[in-house]
Structures are given as structure tokens and as C-alpha cells.
Amino acid sequence: LAKTTQPISMDSYEGQEVNITCSHNNIATNDYITWYQQFPSQGPRFIIQGYKTKVTNEVASLFIPADRKSSTLSLPRVSLSDTAVYYCLVDSGAGSYQLTFGKGTKLSVIP
Amino acid sequence: DAGVTQSPTHLIKTRGQHVTLRCSPISGHKSVSWYQQVLGQGPQFIFQYYEKEERGRGNFPDRFSARQFPNYSSELNVNALLLGDSALYLCASSQYEQGWYEQYFGPGTRLTVT
Image 1 (cartoon, one colour):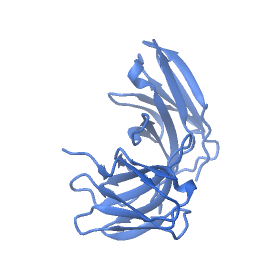
Image 2 (cartoon, rainbow over the protein chains, first blue to last red):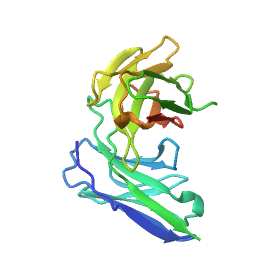
Image 3 (cartoon, each protein chain N blue to C red):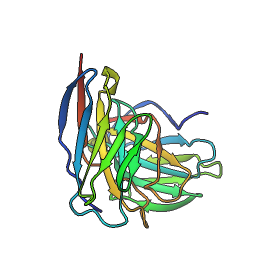
């Protein structure tokens, strides 16, 4: 399993774009990168998943450079409701039956 | 469609007691996983069941057990409760057998052991 490193916390003002970077230097060829969001007292929610380059959905964008040793979750124009913990997960899924979460990044959006 | 549901929402138990937590997956999902989340940490994997068979087990003592029923709902049982078992217990369901595919989490059961 590739080890991931994320900032413990980040602050942002409402309306700004937020970028959360995750380092995964020992990512394997078959590994995918997945981000989950968790609000207080709720279960994590799948946000986005990617393998390389850029993936975009209605919630976020995921940027993955060519060497895949890091990835950046981009949240456009955040609002107070985006205050949550964001987890970066890296796994191939081959023979894997679990998600491995680190401590995540606590994002606080300030009015 | 209803999401993953868990019961009860909150539970207070005493050390040494036994607890049973319940989970109903999203309709059509055959995989159910259980996670423990203590305050300030990410969720930690306990078990995964797929088609009523245990497919994965995390690093938890034998006091923790689970099962999946023919309707794909699941129970997590914890015996001889310790103070350290106080946590949010999360259930997740998925269409897929392998854990890394998109999983849908329930709201969790908050267990307090006194």
C-alpha cells in the first residue's frame, strides 16, 4: 500500500478555490488515487477517483502529474458547507477488500 | 433510493458488555464493510463481507465479529467491551467485491463505553 501524506489542516475564505495536495511517492503502477470527504458525525463520501492527468466531475477536479507521485484535489469556489475532512487514498484494489484512510486534511471555510 | 442505514444511532454500554450494531446496504449492493473511527483519526477497516462470505479482516481482536444475512444486511458484534472501543462505527456498501471501488458509507453508530 502506498503511503500518503497530506496537510493536517487548511483554512480558506468562502468563494476561493482550494487545492489540497497529497504526496504518494511510492505509488505503484496499478494504483488509483481516490478522494473522500467526511462531514462531522457522518460517514465519508466518495468525491473523485483518477489514475493520471486530470479528472473532473460536478464536485471537484483531480490533477495528477505524469510521475504520479502526488495529486491535487481542487474544489472550486468553496462555501461554508465544504468544511470537512478530506482523505486521499491510494490503492490498486488488486486483492484488496478495504479502504485505507490516513488522518486526512481538515478544511475550514471562513465566511 | 435509500442510502446505507445503520442502527442504532447512538449507544452507551458498560465495560464488559456485548453490543450488536446493524447495517442495511443500498439495494442491489452485495458488499458490506465495517470501519471503526476514533476521534481525530481516519476510519480503520474491520471487516468486509461479499455475498455472505468474509472477504477481508482488519487488525482487530477476536472480540469483534460480523456476519452478513441473505438479504445482504449485516451485523457487527463486539464482546467484552473495553473503554477503547468507544468510537464511531461505520458501515459501507458497494456493488463491487473489491474494496477500492466506490463505497457508500452510512451515518454510523456512535458507541460510548463507560
